Image (cartoon, rainbow, N blue to C red; front, top):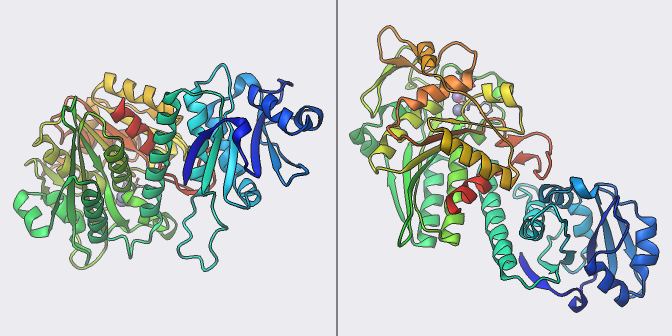
Length: 485
Ligand code: BES
Ligand code: MN
Ligand code: ZN
């Protein structure tokens, strides 16, 4: 997909999308220019016949083969850039069908309450998200996609170009993440993910280390290896490093990489297992973030890490009652083999300490409890540094990704008391997400650690706002924004 800025009168496109507010019955500057070119049809016809209600869409064919699509923006004071993306994603298929030559022109919609950059970049972002479909296994593929976007704008501001470029990079990264998540576990094995990560590193000329089982044994990743030991797939640990010339901070970004979570011997019921190929979304997300960072080249040092394995029941599986000597030396009694993500993350958090990062962030489809607490559209976050949490929340407000902080109290450790080891990996059912967070906290020495639980938001069964159903690529945007600002 290619996006260019263009002056309204210079377009030869056959499909022009214009936005109309419900409560502002006047032409925008861009519409005024086009109105002259199209002999007053916008002022005389469209403005009169179109209500502008949010999500209303109407096509006006003109005589010269040009079609104008009117998009209802709703109330002026309620409009946001997120709503614009939502409109584009929701109406994508009808717009795309009208764009016979794969080109669409889109008005740079303006609103005094929303930044210009946010509004213009929402168009390529929305279209690239709308463009996405995981149809590799469909014998009948999606209709042709939008190839070229012309953004009709009167502004020459080079800031806008930067925002457009960023939107393209970020939406491509989100789609990259979604591709990994949608793929079946049979294909997206630990080894396959490590190959994809290696290709990514080669492509951008960054460093990658891939550790295999024997090496991991030597390095003491015992909690991680226990989780993978019931599977025929060999576990892998990947560590990618991006480093700019004068990095302002060093961040370790860890993604949960369970390529399939059957629950292990504490096997999941069928309905809970259905989507468990997505249990590597944390890994897919941090790889997506790394891809964007390699293209945006901010002044940071970013370490992306993921422990990849399958959690399977078999004769060689780890068992409840096993005591694992984690990489940190702390011992963990296995209380439930389905609480595997935190075991793998524990060892990675310890490994991350060894590079002395300024900040540590982990992202994981960690607990069903976060869905009980926040549903499928709000991501749970927690950590050990309120300033860092607040900064992340502010970032998410900018990107429009809903997040909510959950508490971690020190005495939650009581839930994890073991008679024979330093702790158990689970406790009573209540406050499950926070208790999981408390568990993880034992394994980081960092004073700035943030934990993101995307169990509810990684994969959704109905569309929400600007997100289509299925893999969402959630948090790619916010993490990239957080790391680049
Ligand atoms: N991968 C699951 C969490 C999950 C649930 C992700 C639903 C996406 C959707 C995790 O490994 C898990 O099984 N957690 C258990 C923990 C429990 C045994 C303490 C859970 O939440 O049920
Ligand atoms: Mn599990
Ligand atoms: Zn899991």
